[in-house]
Image (tube, rainbow, N blue to C red):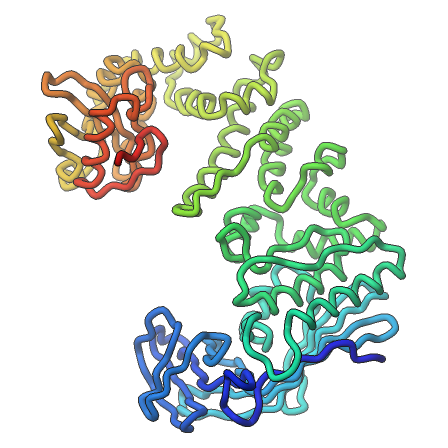
Length: 536
């Protein structure tokens, strides 16, 4: 047994700048959002308040002291059972076959019902069992074990949030002795030394991202490495402007994965002596081929699962190769909209391949699909609008794949269906009606209007008939002579497409582009399309 690193935070003196001691403790009352209780350690006063904007600072009404920074001077929790740390000692102990991170601290807990506080002696142990390839966490409050948990799974970040002291400590907070950065560096080196003795190659356990919870995320990342040494590092601190929780929902898409898939993968690993990747492939029912092993990442799991759910292996291979080439474009101004669009594209491409691959299998390669992805997605939409007669004509006709979109757009526009009045409220129609710089902007209200506009502008908008309603609208732009010059697709108060004649982008006509920008401002719409360009 050997102590290899130590870090101390706080002292009996409430002085953050000198010792790193927190000066105020705050809790949010459960089931009463917006009601807070706080204890100021400067004056010993306890107070209640109901507004806390941005949560960056707090002024004590008892003594007037201003406290700055959550995780630094301010210790905050919204979980009723949390013990907020005051003085903390963190050490790393190296044993023969395991490593322990031990935390001993004095802590404060709120009782919001009685409006009182209590002090506790708390000990936490994060144990990394190198020999068994597992890790666990234990919390002891006032000499009683109150929590024990196997750790090393991606769900730990949420399960242990505000239960362990690590989730309250900012990575860059002032310390009385040592630093978190140095302690983590020693811990990572120690883990690698143990693993190399077992015959494994060295791995990076370092994670980037937000510094607010880097200490917490780093310990969980190391626990995960001990359990799954060959698994890719989990971005516990977030990635590309997203929090870890958003990454799980929008990129990993855990809601589409089998329940307890990672726990089941661990069982397969131990039972059949497989690597992490091989076990995951088996649990997710993906083929164990060089292509899949080479390209499978956390972010691509959803796409690969969709691809290999197709009826034939040939379809699945073309779909999976398409998704590898399909880069996920992340627009930080609207990251969640982009994530949803990616998911929708994956499912649409799979449906397109399943629908048309039997007819065009000799020429429908992944390179062709990836090169014209948006065109084929629009083709699939048109196919969904085609009636039985149109589909019967398609199967009789010899339509080349390169002409399929144009053929369907004309066929759908000519379908002799009854008149349909779109379900758009008068208030919404009025809000979309404008006259800007001599251009009339008007929302299309009937299917016949849509068909005429599609024919006049030579585009495939007639296939949008089933979409148009309270969420999606088509706005046509007419010049002073009443001739249609452009068409806009508005989805949830956002302009998604803006096309001139024959699907040319609006920015190619400077006057119409300028009018569309002014129209968006006037109608309270946002632009999320490259068809319109900002002008100086």
